[in-house]
Image (cartoon, rainbow, N blue to C red; front, side):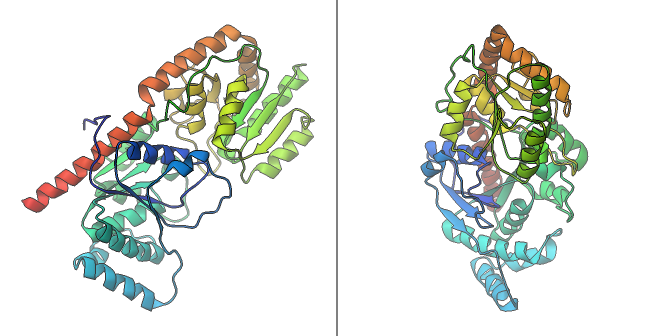
Length: 413
């Protein structure tokens, strides 16, 4: 399938998201803003309540309306009311429940009924979900009930994590008009594992005007890390690398920006490593502050690993942001990261979980100003070529439009 990067706006599209907004999902906000910039009409549907208290500052620029679907139900009467409302909008909706297999839960069904009604009443002609778990479960069912198509973006956790309940990715790929994933590594895995012929790769992108390039500061000493404090980010290996650097007589300064379940363990590791005076856990910060930290740092460390439960990163957005800005990056050879961080070309790569190699790479990048300059320039060139949000969003609009066109042709025939 040929994806046109500057595809114009199409009919109204519904974005189905588990939670909106989420601090870590800046790529979704970037995507929606890029659609809005060319006049694409978007309706956002959120399935679960907001849990976080910190959000990225560009969130206030989103103009698309947000509908928060009810997520708690009790007793049979509300369910029958929803089913009746859906059938009133489209009589064939009832048939879907008997023909669509792999339904995960009654909650999914109830929310899909509500979503199908909203879709019909608001003139939404296509649904797109992010992550192949609950959002796609609901979008798949609602689209069938409403008689429209759906697509979804599979990222990383939804592909590789070992969930206790089946997620029926095979059925979701089968029924989707098109599926998107964010790296060639993912695409190859999905095609081999799920026989997903209608899957394509569309890289996440950035607003490159917001992330303008400046050369790295030649004598900046600080190491920066940004991400959720969870196992797959590998920050425990970064702290061990910092301990090794300190033991070798190096002055060490590091900020780790983010929040998460591993915070207590990381604080204990910092204390046990006698690094409390030079390693700071900053908590979550607005994106404008993160950008400023990036412009003043020496290097971004992103030591991702495959978690014990199979969870892993696809292509961390923070790598895109740092490389766009001009900050040299060091990461690991996990999943699709080598497509972005090309060793000694656009950054440095080390083996996952290898604290000694990470420490050596950090020392090399901090000490070699010429290397930092070269990595910075080549990284920005790659971001401009392959990770511009205007191109990525245009490719998605092409997917939406082709789905709508195919279904319209079928209805006419």
